[in-house]
Length: 356
Ligand SMILES: *[C@@H]1O[C@H](CO)[C@@H](O)[C@H](O)[C@H]1NC(C)=O
Ligand SMILES: *[C@@H]1O[C@H](CO)[C@@H](O)[C@H](O)[C@H]1NC(C)=O
Ligand SMILES: *[C@@H]1O[C@H](CO)[C@@H](O)[C@H](O)[C@H]1NC(C)=O
Ligand SMILES: *[C@@H]1O[C@H](CO)[C@@H](O)[C@H](O)[C@H]1NC(C)=O
Ligand SMILES: *[C@@H]1O[C@H](CO)[C@@H](O)[C@H](O)[C@H]1NC(C)=O
Image (cartoon, rainbow, N blue to C red; front, side, top):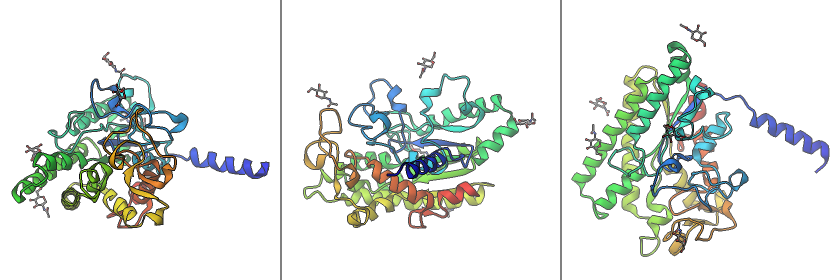
C-alpha cells in the first residue's frame, strides 16, 4: 500500500478508536456471555476462561476470562457506543479509590459466568449480588460527585443484561430433560418474577436505559448437539429458551409502561444465532455445529483448554467452545443488536436507545 494511503487509513482508524463515548457509562450484568474476568477472582470455581486457548485472538493473545477466542458481544456493543471495549470487571477495580468509574464514567462489568436470573442457578456471583455490587458503586458515585450529578449520569448510562441460558439448562436437566407443563409454567413464572425484581432494583438505583440480550437457542450449541444421537438441536431446550424470551418481552412492555422514563431494547441472540444456522454461507461460515476449541464429538465432549486442539479458520465457525460463540459471531451479533432491524433488536435497537 502507498505510504500516503496507509497514513490516511491509520488516521481514520485513530478517529474511529478515539470516538467520544455516546453515553456516560455502561453497566453490565449477566453470565458467561458477558463476563470479562470477574470469575478470575473467584477461588476454586469451575466457570473460568483465563487460560489458553481462550483469548487467542484477543490483543496480545491474552486470556482475560472472556469465554471467547477474542471479544464477546458486550465488547462489540461497547465499541459501537464509543468505548474501547467492555468496561472492566468489577472485582478488578473494587479496591480502587481514584478512577473515572467512581465519577460515574465508563462503567463496570459485574457479569459472572455460570450465574442466572434465579439465585438458585449456578454457584458463582448471583444476579442479586451483582445488583447489590452495583448499589455499592452507585453510592460511591454519589459521594465522588453529588446526588443530582449521579442521577443525571446514571439515567443516561446503559444497563446491559445478558442472562437466562444457565437457568434454562439447569431447569431442563433437573427435570431429566422432560419437564411437565406444570413445572414449565412454574419455571417461567419464577423467571419473570425474578427478572422483574432485578430490573426494578436497578431502576430504583437510577437506571433508565436497559439493553437486554435474550436467551440464545442453547439447544443448538455444540454441547447440546453432542447429547443428541444424530447431532441435531435439542428442541426441548430451544422451546424453553423461546418461552422465556416471549415472557420477558411481555414483562418489559409491561414494566416500561409503568416505570416513568424507562426505555429498553431487547437484542435477540435467539434470532441472530438461528439465522446463522439457517444460512451459514450467508455469513461465510463453514461450521455452525461444532466447537472450534475442544475435544471429542463435535468438539464438545471436552471443554476448551490447553489440552485440546482449536481450529485455524476461526472466522468460519459459529462456536468457539462447546457453549460460546466466536469473536466473529459476537461481532455480527453486536452489530445486529446495535443497528439491526426489528428481527434482531426490538422495540428499538441499541443505537436508538443510546441516542434518545
Ligand atoms: C480488595 O481488598 C480486600 C480487603 O483488603 C481484599 O480481601 C481483596 O482481595 C481485594 N481485592 C482485589 C481484587 O484486590
Ligand atoms: C425467584 O426464583 C426462585 C427460584 O430460584 C423462586 O423460589 C422465587 O419464588 C422467585 N421469586 C419470586 C418473587 O417469584
Ligand atoms: C453537582 O456537581 C455538578 C458537576 O460536578 C455541579 O455542576 C453542581 O453544581 C453540583 N450540584 C450540587 C448541588 O452541588
Ligand atoms: C403487568 O404487571 C401487572 C403487575 O405488575 C400484572 O398484574 C399484569 O397482569 C401485567 N400485565 C401484563 C400484560 O403482563
Ligand atoms: C490437562 O491435562 C493435564 C494432564 O493430563 C491434567 O492434569 C489437567 O487437569 C488438564 N487440564 C484441563 C483443563 O483439562
